[in-house]
Length: 159
Image (cartoon, rainbow, N blue to C red; front, side):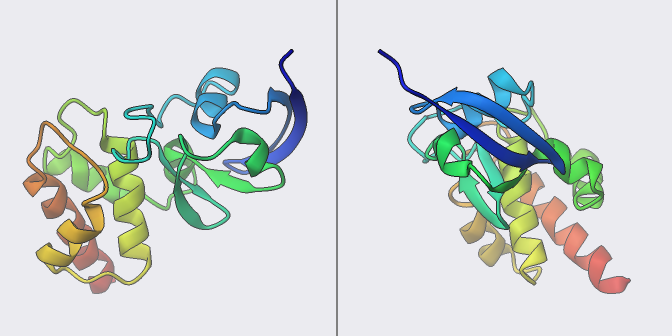
């Protein structure tokens, strides 16, 4: 017999109330119940970073967090970063620098890059690579992603 719980949370600024199985992970809940397919399920072990999203102001791996653990939380997915203008410049820089490639890692990579930028990260390529090291990308070799992050840091500093 499968157990379920009622949860209430804010996702990208909207209140959501759902009944969910107690063992359902957060990324599967967002993708399958809410149709927010930007965050991807990769390794399901928290290693690849494809499911990175923000929960209560902290970037987390959505595959390692249960939906019931998010009860009462404020969640921002890649869709929400774009809607709330937090990552518009980063999204544009990814596009300009061809940092998208296949796109599978992009939402998690952008979430981690945004975390670095918003924490006051500097345009130090080694520091950026270190911060992004928890996100796997099989297509770009990371150079174009690092270029995009450096570009955004420079643009934001110039404002």
